[in-house]
Length: 215
Figure 1 (cartoon, rainbow, N blue to C red):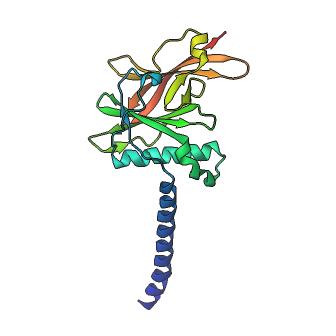
Figure 2: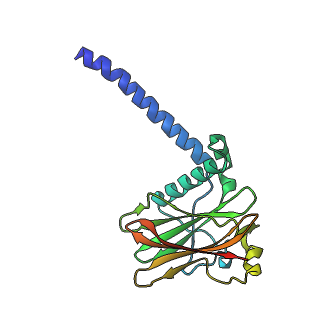
């Protein structure tokens, strides 16, 4: 028994130290987190039509944690893994939209790039199971919207190419497939892309990707 106690004591100490360090790190990150709530919207969705001055509504704890993790990951991705940039988490977050999607809820987390463009992350929430998607859908919208004060302004690309469609919609109503539209831009070309997803439990699986170069 004495031998067992000698082994268990240091192991317990290590475990307690690990737990304390983990809690401290999570608390440090949470200290830099913005307030998490959401604006209720409906599909089809056009980002620039939403009133972002509308008071936010509460979200379940599991959703809050998911959004906080998305913000942390976005900060680390944007700054090459520099954990010190977590201190800028509030600057990287704009708002969250909640949309009914069949028997689930679709959450759209709107993030801010350093140049005040948008980048979105999507995930599903099951109210009955109180569970969220393990993974997120990356919806790069920086070529589509700029953040001006507390509004989203469509880029000039929309006008240049006479595009007037919803950003997120439903196709194949029987299966309720989700359709994301986005514009891509670089120094050589502009591209219009449509990506279709279907639900698989709490996952959004890619069905098809269609793109067209805009000249």
